Length: 249
Length: 249
DNA sequence: CGACATCTTGACTACAGTCAATACTAGTGG
DNA sequence: CCACTAGTATTGACTGTAGTCAAGATGTCG
Image (cartoon, rainbow over all chains, first blue to last red; front, side, top):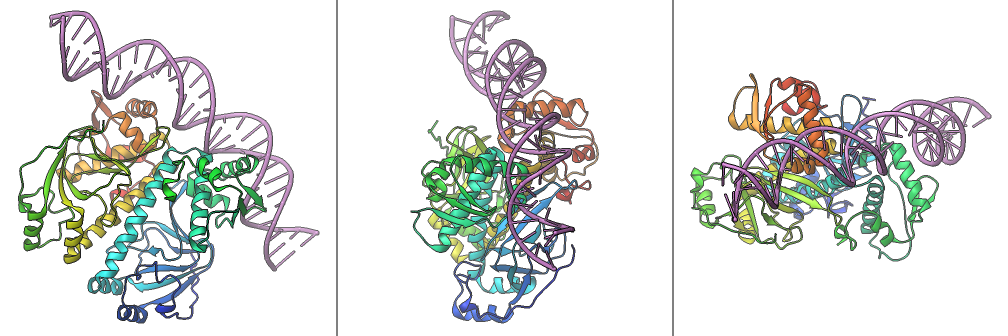
């Protein structure tokens, strides 16, 4: 499992990049983008493969262009906890540190827009906009991590599942910029096991609670992965969060 | 409980500030410190009182100069989870957002070095060093939050307690810059209830596990709060983390 | 089809939560 | 000085939620 296949990906011009408006480069001016364009390189990691292992030397930083990756921690006895879910435009790696602190694994095929760490650090010094954007993104991630801590520490299994579904729906909705009327549907981008690692549960409990939510009519299932939400408010009630959706405000 | 006593504190020159080398201003030059010195003001919050409530307008940012504060989230039914433990030099508030996302409460008497949010944002634009330092600090906090997520999601009650004690010992040691030989001792800065909120447990479970660790000889107790660690390695084994202390590396 | 991943369900267990009684400590006022 | 109170902590008995172990179902791909 230590093999790390790499496929070269055709070069996309920054101005045509699908994540330009949300990624670490979002605030850059045209000339700065040209500079980044000359320095970047693409890398593709197939589903199921590891991008970096915790403790490994990591001489690059990257933005997720497409696909989903996870950040996980593992204890010696095998218990694992997901600590980050990386979606397109999210940033991987840390300026000012050369060793990866967590495992990064591709859940689907993932395309990365990479920079050599040193190159990026130099560019960051010259270009305050990059550091500013990275600060914004990091603060957002910290807020998300803190919501996640409430989930892990205090929510019931049922609330955890409902919250995860709500998070996925919200992201999906923001992507497809649709209203929240009518039945919502989507495909789960995670296996039951990955959901369990995300939520601090076992996969059996995840399975049971999904069945329970189905029996209660909160969700409908087509196959194992395709989910329909007949009534979003009903789902939100199950999350344990504020009725009018503090996190959806 | 909504009362928020404020006491004015004598002005300390930045160059004499005890947290200068670790706070958000750590990278500033002399002239920049002079500028900050003119803009800052002190505020003291007594133990047990709230600095800001989640959802409140927050028109300032601050560094903790002395004392301990907590960041907490509360669900409607009263379940609460601590999501941040703020120690001297830690930063409170978020540039670019005016509403507090979490409750901030003083656990001990707390002294804050405050700036009006707008003033600070302007200063940050002019002074890249501040933004750089804030980015470093935020990345460190994010890493800490992720360790904390592993604890909340996957560790047993006993491991949680041991981990918390190890964190306190480590901080204490770094403060007093001592070697790790000989028996270590310290006072718990948190009540059993606050520990429970930190660890995602009930206060009864915290009490039971502390008793259990005492009976196993991992820790010794004098009174309710004073703890002696006869053998640090023994404690570290109980945390569930890597034997040679990945987090102590 | 058969092989393997993934998922569901059941039976039982165990860890932490709940409810409740009691102890300890510090502070207040008669 | 002691009684009283309030906050904090400990311990016990019992319960319940989620974990464990195991069998079997479903789905996908060669």
